[in-house]
Image 1 (cartoon, one colour):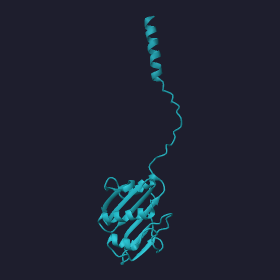
Image 2 (spheres, rainbow, N blue to C red):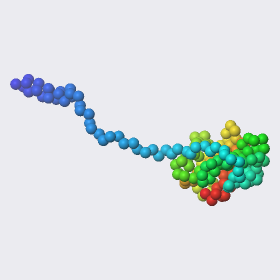
Image 3 (cartoon, rainbow, N blue to C red):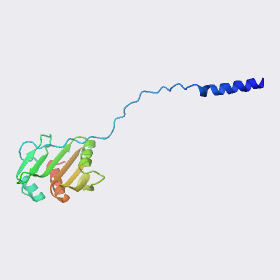
Image 4 (tube, rainbow, N blue to C red):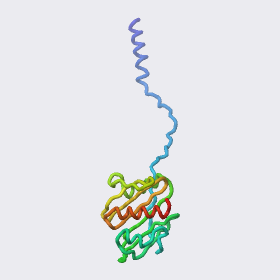
Length: 173
């Protein structure tokens, strides 16, 4: 009788383990929105026009090259400004972004990545990066929902910084 009882207990204990478990029912997976923002697209030069927030004479002085012409993008509310040298090559560009904070920071990190750029700050909370590049230098900063990106054909980031300061002042950002 004891053998039967032991065999019965063993059989009972072994049965659940031998049977495949029924899958647990779970709530359907939900997609959690990501907080990684996408930077705005790179601006494209448009019509030849005066930059609405920077004078060509200031850019020539700050960047150390005569400005031959200026073209602006179709971006709103602040078009990007492309300042050309006398030989027709771009010497300096200014991109102003106003939108959401995540995209502003993503733009700065795109052009002056945290992993390679030197930290850059301006008064009143502007922060980002600056670095020399193969073709010149970049200075990019963001604050809240705005970003200002300056690229120059000069290797000195201080020239781009000076243009960023003037842009921020002119637009009261």
